[in-house]
Length: 131
Image (cartoon, rainbow, N blue to C red; front, side):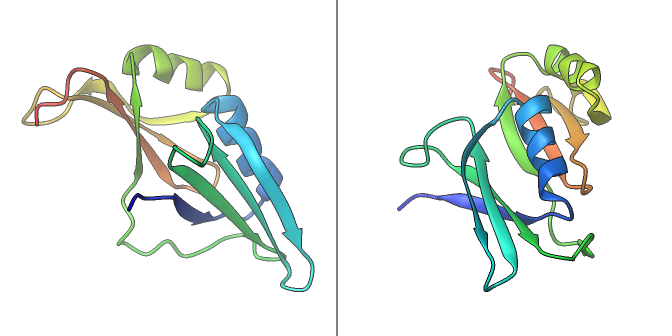
């Protein structure tokens, strides 16, 4: 068994694709509209779905925002240099909500960015995780 994808509901598919493609440098792996169901899906990630976990962006036609509740936390991405990636995100117009640095009560270097729908993405610097 393995985790295939995580689904995020988005309010504007084109805007979300631009963020994940242009800011986080993911590839658009596949995309399909379902007119009968009035929704569209786009799968984005860093590698082929056959051996990588990806994100499924779901756009329900006509729905521009969602109540995210308080159960979902974030999606985590391992990066070589969290400080440099935060700068790249800012240069690409992305929003850094927690600058890179050691986590409280630990040595793991982390940072958080926010996608256009308010979902948090955590960067974890490779080689610093203290677990």
